[in-house]
Structures are given as structure tokens and as C-alpha cells.
Image 1 (cartoon, rainbow, N blue to C red):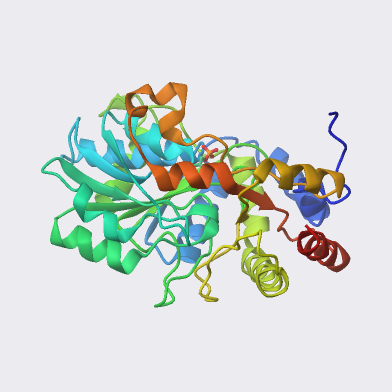
Image 2: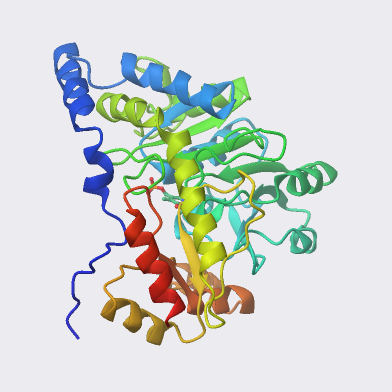
Length: 372
Ligand SMILES: *Cc1c(COP(=O)(O)O)cnc(C)c1O
């Protein structure tokens, strides 16, 4: 079957970003005039602004979200808080980058099943996965919803573990105390990949933390391990946020709160108006702990449902079709049995939820799902 172009695209980035064309052209012109391309004023301004947005003391701009996580882990290794071979607890259904970062840092990922309602790390299963080698709990805020951070921080404290969040999908999500993703644990990583809630125009990422020492090491590691030019304290890499992306992100950050609010309003409509026994809706407590980067439903006959969406002109995506432990790149986990993760990967489908959707499109999506 040839794929028809859906009448409601899953995500229309051009439309989302067209709101900014005028401001971005002016920022591009400022950037050209500045003559400064790496480690200049825009990056510094973005780091300060994003740190403040998250309520964190430090923000370090890096090349992308995968590097952000890897550099946090490597930073803790350089500080002697963890060492090669130590175990890191991650959700078994996370995006593969979370697991790759652990591998790149020379650590051992331990896959723990998620909660079927929230898709996030099941806090009841964390303690049974803890061994003498466990040093870190690394929850992902999958689809934009915070993991249960109060409970996770309590478990971590009891076992003297670090907590690092993969916040790549949850910029601006708020905990019950009003704290924001990026300030709910020891260190947090962000991606500004174009499709994220705060998306750049290319690759970009950041780390936030309140730990001054860690912030210093990460900044150094991302810059060849050097803080003084041509003096190298660590075996670093080249992973820096660039000036143009930083300047563009500053413009888009101004609207992030409103955008997230709009996403929650659309989610509220989906949750109250989609009524179909064959479609299982995600759990959300209605608070600001969710920024709905994605709206993933579950359907037993996924391929039938996807055919139906295609015929109905509604775009969709599957996040994600193959669980990490079944990926060829992660053969070491191929013998694991993770029934919840495997079932989720067979059933999830993300339907369009973004700020470019018009009201009539939202209504059409709801109607189409109700008629399935
Ligand atoms: C996007 C994403 C990443 C990786 O970010 P990049 O900027 O693409 O490297 C990591 N983790 C999660 C959960 C993501 O969604």
C-alpha cells in the first residue's frame, strides 16, 4: 500500500515555527553581525535563562540530548562518585538514547519495567533491582510526564544513590511543589531536537544541576576536557551548544509555558471526549506534571487501527516500535523477559497533539477515534 499524505499531519514543524519567522530572521542577522559562533554571549544568555526557567542554579549547553546524559554520567565518574561497571536503573521502555548514554559512560544499564498507566518507571519495582553495584536511578519523563520523583528520591536517599532525569521530552513539566523538570533531582538532561516541546533548528541539548562542581566538570568535558585553552584536565569530547541555536531557543522559550498549557488543553479534550472501548487512553492526574510531548494511546489490534488512521487521513507515529532489549545493538539484553514493556511496544500509537492543530482538526481526530 502506498502511503497517502495525511490531511492532519502528525506534526507540522514548519507551521509551528512559522510563528517565529520574523523574530528569527532578526536574530539571524544579529548573529551574523556578532561574528561569534561558538561559546559567545547567546549561549551564555540561554544558559542563564534556561537555568532560571527550570529553577536550577546551573545550565550547561551541549550538542544534543544524548551527549547531555552521557556527560552527566561521565562527570560523576570524574568526580569519583561512580565508577566503570556500576549499575544504572533505567525504564525498560525508554528511548534508546537513555540506555546508550549509560553504555557510553562505561556503566551497566539495568532495565526495570514501567507502570502501564503512566509509561514511567514503576516505583514498586525499583528496590528489587538495586544491588551492591547500583549507583544511579535514571528515570525518563516519557511522553512529557514526570516520573514519581518524590518516591524515587526517597528510595535513592535510603540506598545512597544519585538520581538523574532524562528530561528530553518534558521541558516545563512541574512537580507537586511547583518545582520544574530540571530541578527535581541531582542532574537533568534536555534535548532541543526540533520536534521536542522546546525545539531548536538542528541538534542542541543542555544539562541542569545545582551542583557547582558537577557543572564545572561537564562544561570542561564538553569542551575537550579543557577549561583553560590548551590545558586538558580530562579526556573530553567536543559537544557544545552553538550560538545560533541558543539565540533561536531564547526566542522560543518565551512561549514554552503557553505552548505547554495549550498541549494540556488538547489532552484534556482527548481524555474526556475520546470514548471507545478499543482505545486505551493514557493516565494523567490533571496537574501540570505533564507537558504532553506525545499523546500515546494503546490499541490491541494496532496494525488494524493504524490502517484505519491512514484511511481517515490522520497522521500517527509509534513511540517506539521495538523495545530496547530487542534491538540488535543491545544483544546483551535479548534474553530478558519484560512482558509489560513488550506489550506496550506492541500496542502504543501516538496521535497528533501539538500547538499547530486547529480546533476542527482536534474535533476530527476525536470523531475519527470514536468511530473506530
Ligand atoms: C530526544 C530524546 C533523547 C535524545 O536527544 P537528542 O538531542 O536527539 O540526542 C534522549 N532521551 C529521550 C527520552 C528523548 O526523547
